Length: 244
Ligand code: GEK
Image 1: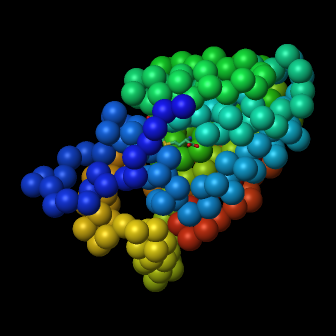
Image 2: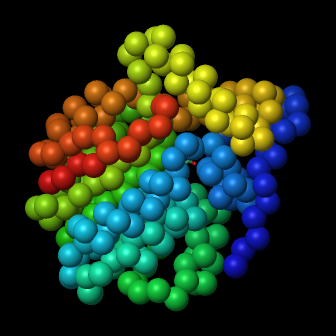
């Protein structure tokens, strides 16, 4: 299994903070980075497994869109009880895909996983019973997000489910500031310094574009989903379930 380092990417003062990218340096620290940065990440991954057991039907496909190192793929793979299922895992970062390939090769479980290095905007799912966008849509340009959700909706079978997890913003400014502060406290408690928090925040500006829960609910309904709501939230991180 690959070895991972702890995340110190923003620990030293940088002359200029460049735009955040999912490159080799991020891949090398990714499991530590996401666990220490996203409140509830482990719970969400576990629940993706629970939902896979419940929703994935025999003879269908599952999609992990923006799969990174395959955490959601593995959660689904280990919990699917249906037979003749294929998981399609997609990411547009070659460094992520290369490492994910190693992670999957070390995992002997069924079902089959097809790993694709591509932009999720160019992928048309088919015969899906479950799709996962676990903190991926937030990196897709705003004007492309509805098209991505429409493609997923088209590719799901009736009764199929989409899990959409996102960093979110709140319309009430006081509440929004409080959620940001509580998230920063979470990062401090996990060992990140003020400098690390500030430099990472600046790297993600213009790259990770969060929206409100109302915007996500409205867009999921506009894409066609009939049942849409939040099942998990911790501060400004939330996950929605949308059922076709
Ligand atoms: C997890 N889901 O561990 N097409 C394909 N991949 C993309 C695109 C795109 N347009 N934009 C971003 N990505 C994972 C965590 S991380 C979330 C997801 C985070 C990919 C990008 O390369 C990265 O691997 C992933 O989406 C986002 O459950 O780091 O905050």
